[in-house]
Image (cartoon, rainbow, N blue to C red; front, side, top):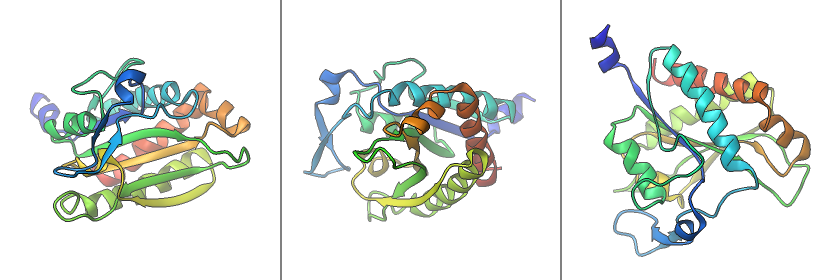
Length: 213
């Protein structure tokens, strides 16, 4: 049993945001060697950080029950690892040789009627993401599908992103799931409810199992 535990795939859960504002306002390179810089953390939608953490905790419980190893970039309300940015989040998962970095977020919009789930994955960038592009895309496909199935949420599909620091510094497959819109009153209530958070967690777990059995 000990051998199995040591060889089980490790899933790195990254509940978004939670960075102290004074650190979040600082900048960091968007990718290794890049002169382009972005702020470390814009703070996210109102209430997003707490929702992301609640979903991550439930997902961790289900993954552990399935025999996976799990690491989390934060287990409390504040992210304070390394320099406090998305580079540090990626490096946390890199150091653990994660089978997948699952970044958990919720969206916001100036259009209150917008709702649904989308999954972001890294664009192909030689020297940055070429080693993780294929498996990240595969993970995005299966986890988007399983999350929509588990929740019944609208399927907003996959979004390729070249500008996300957390993707560009990752050396392990990495995706980011926007679990719904905090700016939509009905979806916000769902995202803040324990039963719906468990639905998302079950969708994540089913997708992880399909990606890394």
